[in-house]
Image (spheres, helix red, strand yellow):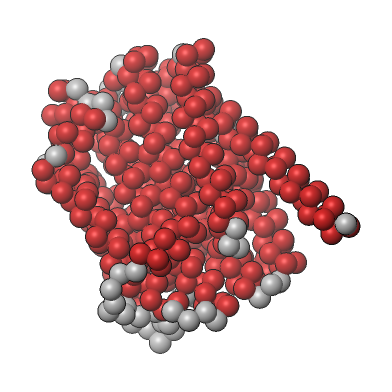
Length: 436
C-alpha cells in the first residue's frame, strides 16, 4: 500500500527535522539558565540569522534533491549533476555569511535590534553562527539527497545524532568548560558536521547512486532546483522573518522582556514547525515518484494521508501547550520573572492554535512542490510570509501584545480559506472546460 510506503519516508523525516529544531531549542534552554533574560533576548535576536541560513540552504539542497528525484523518475538526462551543483552553489553563497561573521557581526546584531547590553552578551555568539553557515547549509544537501536516494533512515540518524551532539556539548562547553554563550554557539555550529559524517555512510555504500561530478556550476540548474525548493525556503525563512518583525514590534511595546517572552514562544514553536515540515518534506520522494509514473490515484492518497498525519500532529501540539504552558515557560525563566511568565504563557497558547491551520498550508504547499506545481506551491509559501507580517503590524496596533500573539493563527486561517477557494474555483473551471 502507498500509505505504508509513505510512512517509511515521513516518520524518519519527522524525527530528522525534529532533531534539527533541537539545535536552537537546546541553546535556548542552556543560554536561559546561564544568562537569564538578557541571554534569551540576545539569542532570540539572532534567530533571524538562523532563519536566513537555513532557508537558503534548504532551498538549494532540498530543491536540488527534489529536482533530482523528478528527473530520475522520468528518465531525463543530466539529473546526476544536481548533487555537485548544489554543493558548489551552497559553498559560494555561504561565503557571504562568513564575511559578515568576520568583519561585521556587530553591525548585523544592531540591525536586528540589539542595544549595548545585548550586544555585549550576543556578539561572539553571532560571529560564530555566521562563520559556521557552510556547515548548516551543506547539511541540507547531504540529508536531502541521502533521503531521496532511498536511505531515509540514515538521513534521520544523521540529523538526530547531530541534535544529540548539540545538546550534550551545549552543556559541556557552557558549564564544565566555562565558555558560556560562546560554547553554545560552538556546539550548534559543529553539530551539522556530525550529521554530514553519518550521511557519508550512504555515499560510501553500494546503494549509493549519487556522485560528485566536477563541472562548472550551472545557474540554470540552480534556478530549476530553487523553483522546487521555495516551499522549504519559506518554511525556514518564515521563522526568521517572523521573529525579526515580532522582535521589533515587541521592543516597542514592552522592551527586552517582550522579546525574551517571544524567545520562549518562537523556540518552542520551532518544534511544531519542524514536525510539520518533516511531513511536507517526507512525502516528497514518493509523491515525485508517483507523479513521474502519472499515478493520480496514488498521488491523491499520499496527499490525504499526509494531511491526516499533519492535523494529528497539530492537535497534539495545541493540547500539549494548553496543558503544559506554565511548565514550558518555567523551564526558560531562570530568574523567575513574573512579567516574563505572564507574557510567555499567553503567547504560547495564542500562537500554537495557528498550527491547526498551518498544518494544511505547509503540507499542501509541499505536495504541490513534489508534483512539479511550483507556481501553486510558491504562491502558498509566499502568502504565509506576507500574511503573518501584515497581521503582526495590524493586530499589534489594535490589540497590543495579544495582537502579536494571534497574528500567526489569523494569518494561517486566512491563507487556508483563500487557497481552498482558489483550488475549488480552479477545479470548477477545469470541469467546465472538459464539458465544453
